[in-house]
Length: 343
Image (cartoon, rainbow, N blue to C red; front, side):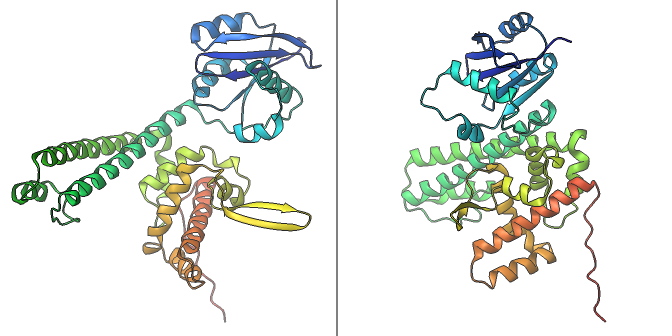
């Protein structure tokens, strides 16, 4: 049987540095290949035999992973943060990085991160773009208010973004420069465009049969809306990757950083090493969910009695993760269990 070769790939925008090693650690070949499909196709024909590969997670990893995976015995993606702790060295360059990736793969010490399917990553890209559109729309709304405040115009904040009120406002305001009115009209036009765009993007995701069933089951949890359910499905991927809810809570960035040494433990603020998209959505959902979910409302009141509103929202967000993970792994709608009566 032909022996397996281990390939480390240091990925960049224009080039990929590679290192090929045998199981004993002997370097077979090192070099650089252009980060283009044609060049990679030629590079694959020159490999010495069956191979396993490792590459670091970057902006460019997705398409390279999809292109190379069918040709490899196994292809893994390394977690960039965890990789730093293992590969810290005085000497660092592309060639050395590729060699370290090959060595970590060879001795089975590569800190691997989950890689979703190409179909799910495509849908996740759409959702993240929708979130970008929404954030931009909020900035434009704030800018419209700022423009009116700069020139001393009075307005109703709750009605400002309505088409009818906005038209009437521009007609009745006095001593407002024409340039400000032009900017307000431009902002209003962009706001309408963004509103249509985000609705169309959500409609595209809503109609996807690949995720529709999961999203509907998650929405059976009182307080979980469509955007929260979509974010969970497209950011988590396979829920089986988490063996318990504590791991999922940590991944969502809803627990504090821990530092322990010589028997002394310190807890910091909530971790910055997280999925920021899930963290943001869960915390925002936690502020609204208690209005719709009695169990979450009771939890919120209990934590709020201790005197910290942020702590209460964080507790609700953690409980939401437990609910979402349970429903997603079980594959059945959420059911509230009746509390047994004490005789």
